[in-house]
Length: 238
Image (cartoon, rainbow, N blue to C red; front, side):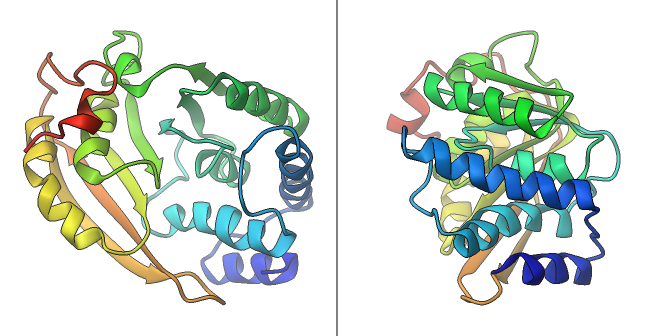
């Protein structure tokens, strides 16, 4: 997806980027590729691939959820900043928190945010399990997002404890989500969530399947969750 196609595809969804935002995306791409030579941030480094599979893919979240109000948003395991930083570029009012377990990635994100002039962004080097126990962050976000991080049964335990009651947990996934959702039903309910809706669509140009699951936080998460680091992955709630 070249830059013009990217702009046109967004325009069809009612998203129009100004010159500054276009420049921020271009700079994002350049910094990503430059730092990728020093550390492993992404396997996708060609410009058209980054615009489609990282930038556009991240922004599909805005086709299914309202980002126009100043949401407090947490991105769990964002890696190189996806999906939250492309969303932040398009919707500057967002208050973004990213938590990632790798220190090097946090260093990259701090540098990137500075270079792009992004305000109201905070980056934390921590495991999601520990972060979700911290009273400063627990149940403190209107929207918690994760993109291709773990199975739904695991993700629910990492993300729903951070989601405020009445807020939303959004999981951005590839194909075969239906099976994962079935396995995750008990986990979702145990930590206070209810499945709201699942959207299935295809990325333009290559036609690969994407799924976005929206989970509403209905009840407070019991104190015991999330369990200690590593446990949700080893022993998902079943």
